[in-house]
Length: 203
Image 1 (cartoon, rainbow, N blue to C red):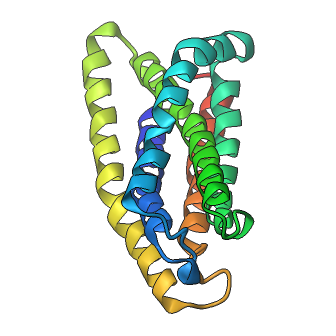
Image 2 (cartoon, rainbow, N blue to C red):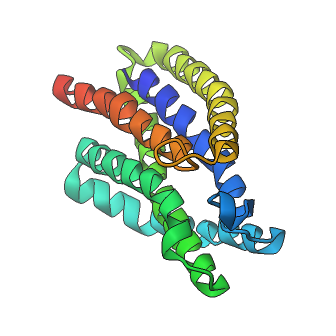
């Protein structure tokens, strides 16, 4: 189950990271934010300091206070919400560059801070899934293999879906929201059941 969780979150996580620049670069008429390369770089780079501070200071305290599985559970739900809200940034940010930039950075940070704890916690679960210390390397290797499959499959499938839905110029749910809604559903119906199953089994 732990390796399955790693593969599922890798499938969605890398795909979302690949889709984000396309959303930022696209023109407003097709659901994009019409940003230049400098603004896109700044939007993505702004996550770095926030993520560093979160991992060093916040994550250990959250896990210590709430527990590992409740942390993963909460982050899974939050991550799905953030993915579904990502294309909404186009509507709420309006035409002002500052509003557009602020909304994109804020949601990107929130999405990343929801996703990363799932990854970090999954490493712990995979290590604990080994029945004996001697098998830990094999279990970790299996986890990395499943992760690789998710990383290989996710980006081409979901970026293609984003490109197709954007060019289709249809109404919701077949517009530019489609890929992001699909990723949110993957989290809710792919990642979340595994998280709940692991919690139920106490592993």
